[in-house]
Image (cartoon, rainbow, N blue to C red; front, side, top):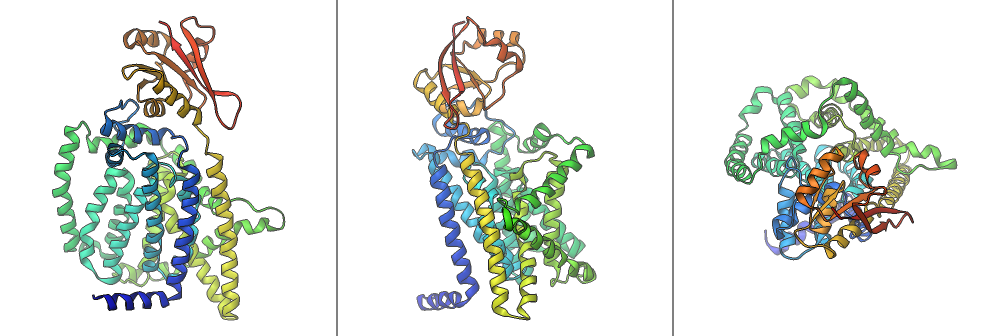
Length: 508
């Protein structure tokens, strides 16, 4: 393609009003993310963030890695260590995550228009761009946005095959899943969705898709040296997955799974309401959820045409893919990982917003029969009201959490300035203090006697108590009127005048 052909292609693309609307949404999403980035660039790290970053700093600079849990995937800290090695700080890593969040906006659109229509995709893209889970966690250092990026990318390449017959794209499916797995184990769910979908619509013929088999072969060739390297580095990636499932959220049966599943279902209901409207606008709070229900009703087409779908027909198979997407997310996080955490369910919301897009498109088509302009006005008004509600909620929750753990950051930096590299710390906030102080930090022992034995062996310099992380019950009695410790400093959070982190010096 020469320069003139490229220009003509761009001009033709820009003539499509849907594409112009997408560019407007994308620009708005970029501005919104840069605004929240400016607010959060220096916010204190939470537990998970500190774990990833202390390990990255350990790899790059050789600082202690106490607090790093071996069950975590290792690729993200290794990737982040590159920036620490070359002198870039956390702000740069956060900016990379913002870029991934923006990339996710683009992928929601391209996946959505391949599955349904440009109208439904635009609605889903707009709603996702203002959704609190992406805005809040996209500004926290973690693997949620990267996981979603690789998952949506996998869906995009798969749809190039399924909708457009471009089988070569399938070669990338397994390698991308492998990279996602090394970032976050639950990236496997996206591959599972595609495999289940293919088994349903193609059955045994699914095993005969050559490029997908080549993709698996490439994955095996690449995975063997990676797994060997990880094993030699002290990380068993298979065992890590087992430990991640069992060590943090051990399955406890239906008595726990059913309530957790309902919590995720409630999350869909309440998160689509955003920040509640008041007064005369109270009923408007349910607009997006109502559109979601209307969108779900359109799935009757799938059930009426099941024979066609099971015979490999593609006209209604898009509904099946979305249905599998939602069911896998709900069953896995509600029943397998039977603990509630809203960020886990981020992977479901692109599909949820696409269903809302279908609902809005249905309403648009009904009103359009009477008046095209009225249909546009109604849908735009609904989206603006729903979007405003979601933005308000996002803004509120981001600002509300800005100063959490701030006194731990201050305490850690104080320790760094008032200790030597070989000194030890004892605290319940191990990852945060290890990261900020660059000193080895250990948990309190379960009993006071074990604690005394430990300090006789390690000779720690400081003991830190903080309201941000709970210590064993005996600690709160031990430190009062204890002649073995000396209070040397205390730090309050910006949101309270009372000290939330206290530093004691051990005299034993």
